[in-house]
Image 1 (cartoon, rainbow, N blue to C red):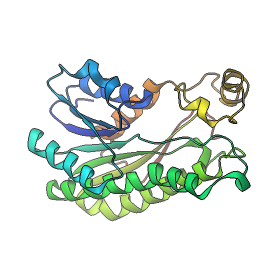
Image 2: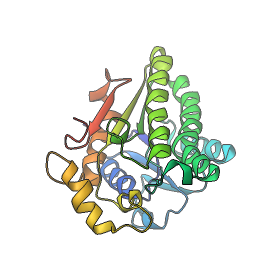
Image 3: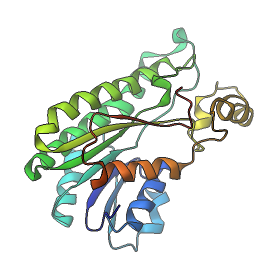
Image 4: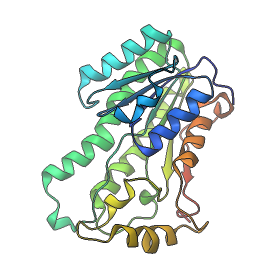
Length: 249
């Protein structure tokens, strides 16, 4: 899957899945623009010629516009977008979820994706080609109690992705959603109850829920994102790809 010379924007690039994706794409010869609220974890790529980091809040429309404009000016085009940024929800009964918390989850997991996809469509329509990958969650298929707001946000990501895939198909823009299963990242522990034992939950709840017997690694997700951004996936759009070790069955 040669990605030499292609240009990709990655949101949530400073997290586990984001860093693994950046690393894989950079190694494949792609131009990579890594975006996050905090890009300190991306310092290892500062000397890499085909990598640029943007630190900022992608819930701000002007920031999103700036990222895409600067990317095109530097690299000449935008071939793909991977929306990896997102937050978890600690297991909380519905009556204890504040409206502020609900809006925060929806904004980061859904509104941010809307803003970046909207901007990407502008550039990709001009080129008459492009790839967009949005990260959802296996929880949309196999929900867990107490995660109702998070699951709602990721269910909306799936529906939005399918609708956008149909809308942008005539412009040869592929839009797909990837649903990770329980992944071995710092985010996993944030799904437990606030007073819960994180290590016990990882082993007894999350790892045991995966039929293949292990937590999903960031590189598992990164490899699948790389595939969906590549020319090998040119006839795949509006698809839900589960990378969950069988958790969705």
